[in-house]
Length: 117
Image (tube, rainbow, N blue to C red; front, top):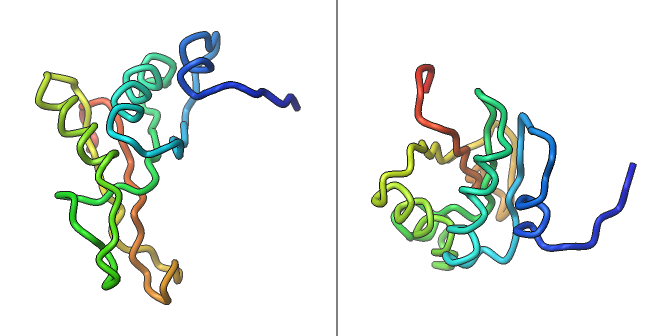
């Protein structure tokens, strides 16, 4: 086991291995996520997935408190509008209780477009 102290952008830019699963839970700004996803896709194994935290579809709240984080949604939309071949699957509800005593989650899976999704 090793401990690294660097940003996701630094790590992903120099990564010399491929991953089946990458969890992106950084500063959640559209600018940062827009940069992280292409770097993550470069080191993602075929068939692998990226899990995004705080993905709010259509930049709308998921819970009744009205709060949401627009960055991950805006970044994925921008990448797709620029021709990035990626699919986004918001998980929506989970079988276990999440925050605010609900089953709703802001997690979303991202992968390259391809068969099976």
